[in-house]
Amino acid sequence: MNIFSLYITTVLIWGSTWLAIKYQLGIVAPEVSIAYRFALAAVILLVFCIATGRNMRFSRRDHGAMAAQGLFLFSANYYVFYLATYDLTTGLIAVAFSLIVVTNILFGAIFLKSPIRPRVVMGAMFGISGLVAVFWPEIRAFDLANDGTVGLLLSLLGTVLASLGNMMSAANQRRGLPVVQTNAYGMAYGALIMFVFAVASGQPFNIDTSALYIGSLVYLALFGSVLAFGCYLTMLGQIGADRAAYATVLFPVVALALSMVFEDYQWSANALAGMVLVLAGNVMVLSRRKKQPAVEAHAAKT
Image (cartoon, rainbow, N blue to C red; front, side, top):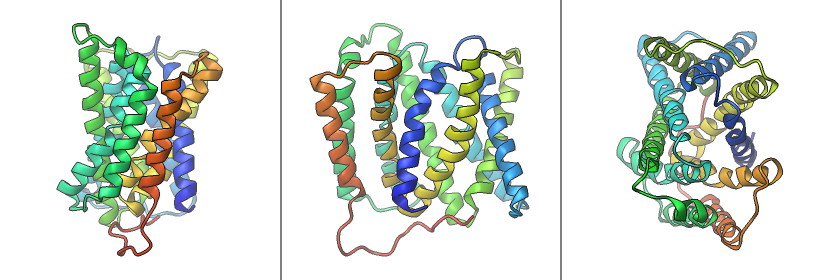
């Protein structure tokens, strides 16, 4: 797949997972649902890897790197975001998570020695400003004196954890670790971490047999985890963490479109203006000058 296809696939799928995650909350504890999701995703990927004859033997050091990626990208960050949903609307969480564009730029410069491109920074600022406009009603209603403060802090923590997971994935790709196998093992480690955490916290391994829960679980595992993460992390290795992360600025707009259908969301003037800013920033981030240096990040090997 080319960069455009990878980008569009990531945006559309992750834009729809907000609605699917909503159907996961309720009877089953968040850590248990996350464990189910990534266990199922890991099984799908591992079977795929074996069926296609991919190399599944890696060193202990490689497995340590995959486990670290699983901790930050496939377990801990999701658990923190699930907790945040008890105190914040999904609009505010989306605004907080869009800051991963900024954290990826900063962490990429610190850990991967990636240059900070002015065009990317400017585009990210346009996108974040647009999201603030889109979610202005939620922001205006936010009161720092209530429990929402905790939710906001959790959202920011989840964003930092996800960004660190992005850095680990980019570093793993630079070391030559293939995206598909790394995701398979990483998701397995992430599921194991959540299973252990659920046992330690005394959560029952129950299941919600409703069609909404089962359907959303399968969608999140197959599309939200296997396909979307594969596309996103491949793109991350090819164009860098800063530019790849801009997909996380655009997918809340997809989530809003779905809310119009399923949650009766009504567009306001602020929301429309914000969407224009997001799209303008998107063009700015993805565009390149005519003369470009060689791509710094190695392409993912699968």
